[in-house]
Image 1: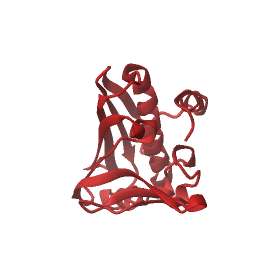
Image 2: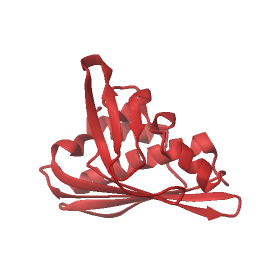
Image 3: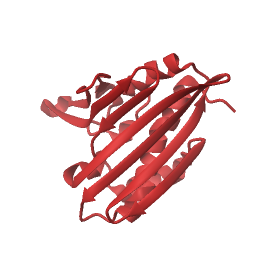
Length: 176
């Protein structure tokens, strides 16, 4: 994974912004990020892509450098995991803790550079049918003990999570 400053610079150059992105809260103890997009897809179609992260997750935000190594088992206890073929390793990005297919997915885990800290993260993804498609919301909450400045990292985390949602939207199509 790239160092956080490189990630921030990359996001700025790409201009990655979902339809709605916001750092809801940030303190030395934690952060909350919210991203939302309106999709040209039914909740069932959007769900089918959501549970296949290899279709949309950025290789830049993987340990192996190849999104094809990402899998997500959408059942309680399932893993959002990544194979590390070069050294026969693997990584658990998040663990599935709540599933209502086509409606809601919740996973627990500290993503990327937060993984080596004493932090706990929760990503809640909701899908709501709207005229002409689906509204998809991603809320990521992270907190706990760390030596990192979470206030400084909040916009970085928001940008990375938002980038993945925006990439998913590119696969299924955005509503205006």
